[in-house]
Image (cartoon, rainbow, N blue to C red):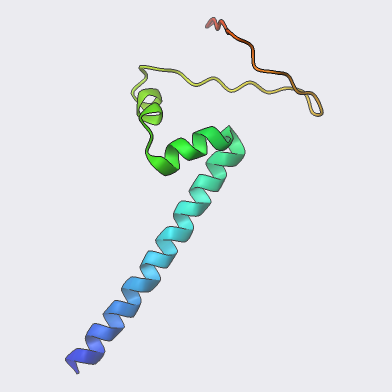
Length: 82
């Protein structure tokens, strides 16, 4: 009986790990869609850059271009707040 209980608990834990991995992948995919690959990698790798943004010691700006347009990243960028 104890063996069956342990096996059922093991299978339940395996299913929970799989569900948690799928949820994590979904969250990273959502971040990738909203912020791009660089930020998704920060989240996936728990990068120091992410900590700096979350701690507000560095800032992240998202720039959107009209559909079909693209531009090269400028060497410098100046932002002003309202």
